[in-house]
Length: 299
Image (tube, rainbow, N blue to C red):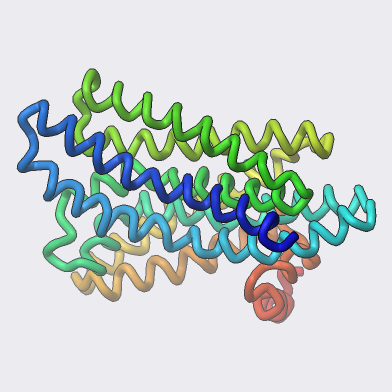
């Protein structure tokens, strides 16, 4: 039973990771055919070692949410507590979006400062351009990760594998078209990978709706975090520019803008009632954040 349960999880993860191998082969072949073989190695290094490195940092949180969800969701399914299953499904999706949406906005607004902070002079304009173009991948990758976990938690272990295979085929087709006909170079793989996660989100959402008769809540899950993130992004950009004008130190300006942005986002999230006390407790570090929020009379 254990082996039969684990194998589908491993296979769905394998399909996610085999993307990089397929992408490498297709892009190397395509750019060589287009006479850009020498340029490819440098661009692939930037894409893999800088862009993907940053994008996968917020995904670690989504993975932890997904891992913690499966046992409790499975127990609710076994006990035939449908209301609890729907509640846990809604909560984990909302928590993932509360983390992923501001991460994507922050990476967009502070793309250049973050790259310069982490990689120094090697944080070149191409890496910044990739992050500006592809930071939205954080949202869709996080959502596809947690919806995979939901399907596995409700004992539909093979569904994420089927959805991942369909998404992989569509991804390869999109990559080839963007590379060979769109002539978008390394950005073809960046956009194709975003499309892969979009396809996964769509297919997983359709499966969850069918199996659970689940209706996705939009306002608190997507719209309010997006509104709070937009204000947060504007504040972060203003704080960064202000510190740079006064001190001209990227490290201090970036650290200050991130700290202020986190505080502003947290306050807006609570004030807009995008999250309540119960949901905050379920998030990693949520109990400590709840105590801090109560200290400042936000709840």
